[in-house]
Length: 209
Image 1 (cartoon, rainbow, N blue to C red):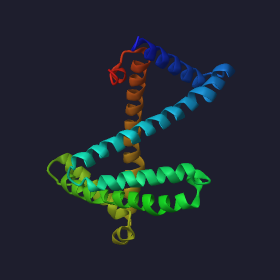
Image 2: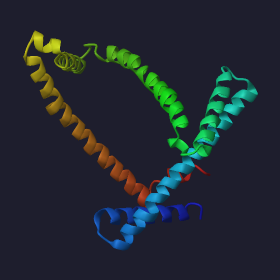
Image 3: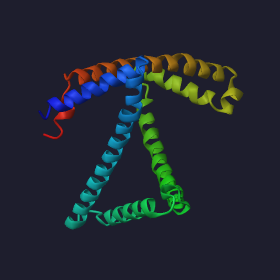
Image 4: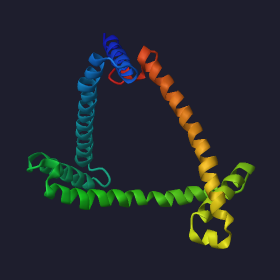
């Protein structure tokens, strides 16, 4: 029963969403729009709430056991409670200027700073990848160099053909590869969706066992 009921619900919801996408059936269209799509929002909200509680429980354990750098757990829990309280009780909730001040001036800037650190890892990975150890790596090195040189004004100053080659690599070669990946990913997602729909893939049902 613990597996049968989720499989029936998954199959029914999947069939309804397929019918809603390909056919104009008012009853199914309204049901998918009014119920199923809202159910997704509710499920995401519950998942975010459970994830937050699990995160807080994890950091409480860090504090109680005084693990390394457990002081930062106090900061995380304090900021989480502060923003949660402001978002719920302030007038306008998350649209309140006080809430927006902290979000825009702290969260956005910190996210940008953390994301910018990825450039150093990207540079190190490019250094390792752009070594001409084989024919494939040599082609990658030459094409990457042409794209970078053709993207800056100094490239056109050196030789007017760099921008043209750079555009050809991006629009013809790169787009063709990306579209091939997209087709492969779509077919893979379609096959996995069919496996979930008919009950062949049941890995997601074993999480609660």
